[in-house]
Image (cartoon, rainbow, N blue to C red; front, top):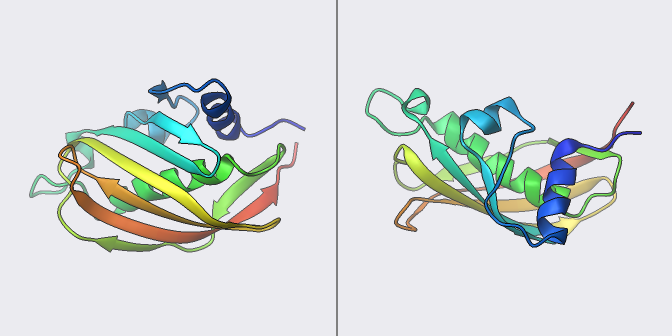
Length: 148
């Protein structure tokens, strides 16, 4: 059975104490300039370079993209704690938006609240380039055995 490439990437970042590791395993992550800034068991900080293609008419990042950035962070934090041969699926996500997210450099931090065999509960926050809190989210994530 092959392992999930994003789980392997998170483990490589943690085990090698690597930072600013580009995420090249997902087309959306590539388009968003996603990188692992730092990672430890149960925690991750991701950086994004969000371009104009992801903004709405008023020049701020579209809300669905903000939710996706938070989702990426929670999934990557969960990959740090899931066993080889598993993948994850977001069951539901509650997102809260506090201020508009500007295009450009954004950061998402996530941590796990509870890790079980079949479900992980996570939370994430999105920050602007000035470290202002832009949005937050919580989500239950299903742990699923991968099929070959």
